[in-house]
Every structure is written in C-alpha cells, then in structure tokens.
Image (cartoon, rainbow, N blue to C red; front, side, top):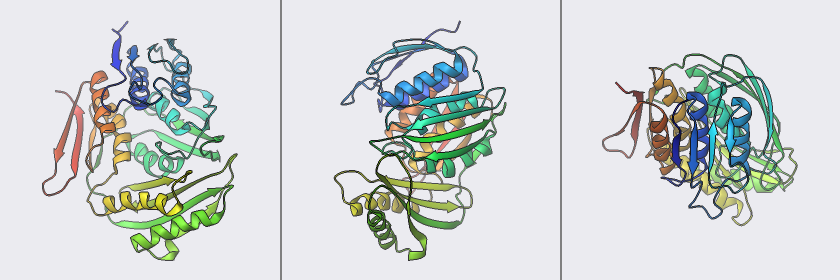
Amino acid sequence: MSPVITIDGSQGEGGGQIVRSSLALSMVTGQPIQIDNIRAGRKKPGLKRQHLTALQAAVAISNAEVEGVEPGTSQFSFTPQAVQPGEYYFSVGTAGSATLVLQTILPALMLADAPSTVTIEGGTHNQWAPPYDFLERAYLPLLKRVGPEVELTLHRRGFFPAGGGKFTAYIKPCGKLKQLDLLQRGTLKKKTVEALVAKLPPKIGNREVQTILRHLRWPESQGRVREVDSIGPGNIVQIFLEFANVCEVISACGRQGPPAEAVAKEAVVEAREFLDSSAVVGQHLADQLLLILGLSAAQGNGGAFRTLPLTQHSLTHIDVLKTFLDLDITIEKIKESNEVIVRLSKSL
C-alpha cells in the first residue's frame, strides 16, 4: 500500500477545496490520505453538509475505507480502492453546492474504464460556488478539448436557502488527457446578460439586467430576465462572454440585504476587469483548470493558460497538486500588465 499523505486543511486559503481536490487526487492516484484541521480558520470549522456529501460520493465510487465521517469533523482518513464507474445518485440535503460535489468525483470518473451517470440534488446556483451554467458553458467545453465528454441535464434549479436543485451528468471517460493551451481568447462573438428569478418579483431581475447593461453600455437586446422553477425563492444574474476560443461566465447571486443594483454591480466589476485585460480565462475558471491540466501534465501533456492574478484559492490548489503529482508549475508575470501565464508540465 502507498504511504498515507497527510494534508493540513488549514493551509493557504484553508477552505473546502483542499478537501475536494485531495479526495479527487487520492482517487486518481490511489494514494491514501489523512486530512487534519479541516476549514480550521472558518467561522464554523470542519465538514459542512456539501463537503460531507462530496466525501460520501468519493467513498461510493472508489469503495474507499474512511474514518471520521460526520458533520463538523475536523479530520478524516480516506483509503481508496479501484474506481467503479456506474450509475450514482447523491443528495446534499441542503442548499450546499451540488456542482462542487460533481467536481470532486469527476476527475476519477473521467479517467475510469467505462461511462458513468451521476445525479446530484442540492444547490445549483450558489454564492461562493460555480453555478450550473458555469459548468455547462465555460468549464465542460474545455474539458471536452482535453478528452472526456460530459453532458449535463438540468432537472430543477436550487437556490439558497431551500436548495432542491437537481441535475444529471453523463460522463464518457478517456484514457489519455490531451494538452490544452489557452493563450489567446480570440474575437468576442457574443455578449449577453441573463437574470434568473424564482418565486420572486421579475422586477428584481430586470433591475439587475438594466444596471449591467447601463454600466457596460450594452444595448437592450443583450439582456433578458427568465422566471424559472425551483422549490424556494432565488435569484442570480449572469454575464456570458463568448469568445472564439473560450466562454467566460460571470455571476452574482441575489440575497437578503444588498439591493438588486448592488448585486449587479458585483458582476459589472468582474466583467470590466476581464474585458479590460487580455486574459483568456477568468480567475474562477483558472482555479478549475488547474486540476485538469495537472492530471494531463502527469500523463506527459499538460498545458498553459493566461489569466488574471492567481487567487489565494488557486495558489493553495497548486500546493495540493504538487503534494500528489510530480509536476512543474510555473507562473510567468506578463510585462506591463497584471496578468500571468500558468504552465503545467511533468517534472523532468
């Protein structure tokens, strides 16, 4: 048996991604892990429901032996066996992010020896997590260029605090991951703003859309409001920037407190920063690509992408990757800009 890798869950950004990425890498490499000090710096440390569901999903698909699985736990050990493709169903049980649960088990299933179908219930449009539309339109098209094919079917949206969203992922794996270089985003082909409103007055979404169109000086034809079905009330506004080589999805979630205009301005600030740069991928997409390109690099390929300054989230992610994989990861500062090129390759 491989030696146990001990992970300090409080390192760097110190959030749930350390848990999710460590589980993903443990399953892919077969290396057992122990994670201590889970989310130690958070207001409510330890495993929350969405982290616990991700762990339970990892146990299910890898027939893992695990100790310490309970809400609020600050440490656990995880020893994976061979990954078993198949048909799975997982429920977060709260509005915790269902998309993050998928991203925990997706790396192992996309490298398995047969297809899988995974249905997950929980939050689909959450603050501090990639919304469903981000996965569908920004992340998965790039994953397909690396090799695996993943198709999503959305059954129902789920907003905080009710949750209850549901989607199914159909995963067609591949054995060898290709190289992916994202150094030029190409021509901006289409730009749109969309507000989703569930069990709330549509005027909330209209105020968000109008605020974004006004600040970005886009015509009325590029914005719309959609009333959607969900178990509880909720709202999100999203900006879609479709370039020749990549699609960037920027979102802001409506919530109690901030008015619709303030929520919209959060998305405006992020969109302006991206549009005023030559970055190919935004900071959130950059974070998601690190694991995929790290696994590709471990197989001898890898890749590179141009992005805005790496977040603490991404820097912590790089540290976790290097713990499991023999990688060279370089961060090249681009002159006369605040952008960087991140390159991932196998260590010589």
